[in-house]
Length: 175
Image (cartoon, rainbow, N blue to C red; front, side, top):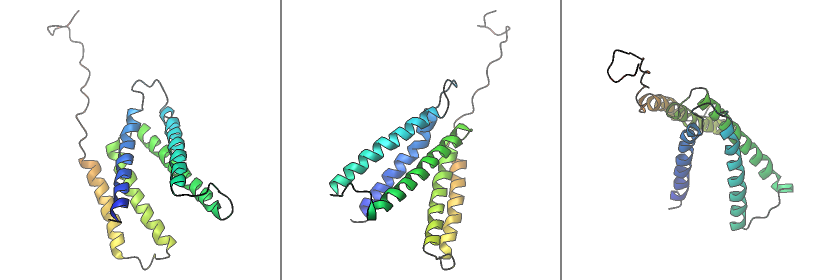
């Protein structure tokens, strides 16, 4: 049962982050009326609101202190660093989407890449580059293959129909 709770939270994270790309695409102006970075501002506002409220509530329920100095300073430093890389990730994801990327292509790269980066950082932090299981590297290769398979085989929908040329000889056309 103890392992089930983290798995549920991880699945909820995957659900939320899997919806992030499509939500960003929906936030774009179809007419070009606003910059693609206008929704990014409210992505930041949402991160700020939910992170601060969630953090304060979590601290309250865990009977934590609201002290961020002394021995508690790493929580502030590393928390800010984590938030920064998360925010830059959101900025890069926004940039990928506005430069022609589609969620069905971009999101598998993002999440497959994130898993791989996490594994590489763990290997480096634990100083196990030479002793890591060869299956780790096989797994990373399989992640790459999986990303390609998912991106290539996700339904893309039908291409847009070409605009009908005005042909005065067709019935129903006004002259």
